[in-house]
Length: 212
Image 1 (tube, one colour):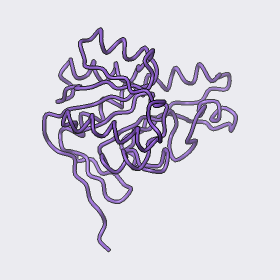
Image 2: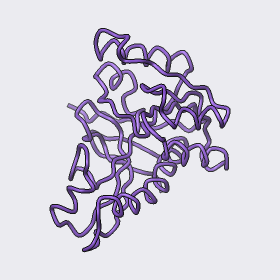
Image 3: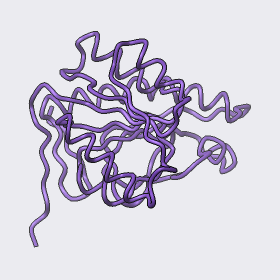
Image 4: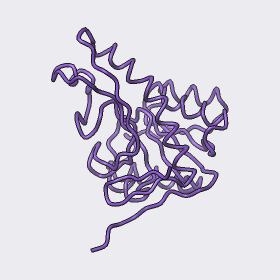
């Protein structure tokens, strides 16, 4: 059977951000858009939490926001189906998870296959899941970092787009390591969007190839 291939479009794109908290990666992406480093516009910032600081930031920046309460939906699939409907209404090209603390169902993953990005504060496939900075310290690894990847149905296992490494210092705490990793997150996440909308990303199976 031939290998499935996906090529990102070369176009001015429409981006949706999904977040649950402060949305520092959302701010990094929006800053890059406003500075002209990404040929795209953020058309929606959506959260599952009405009090998410990231929603407040989005409103202050004049962006459209939306909160969908999961408690109003019978199943997780129903909730994600409503998200798909809202995204399709706005002709969204790319979905970016920025501290979105819900596991996506196949309903959303399949509707936007190879069009959902996430950033994870570890060098995947090592240390998927939560509290990964502390896990890196506990395991005594010499390097940790962050990974921008496409979202697949299996959590933290989608094709890797970009990674950045940082050293793990002997006296690191979860907080100090997280802070150093976050600097790299803010650098490589906007870069991944830039490459996507320049049409330079190709996915072959589970591997990503970047032109140039």
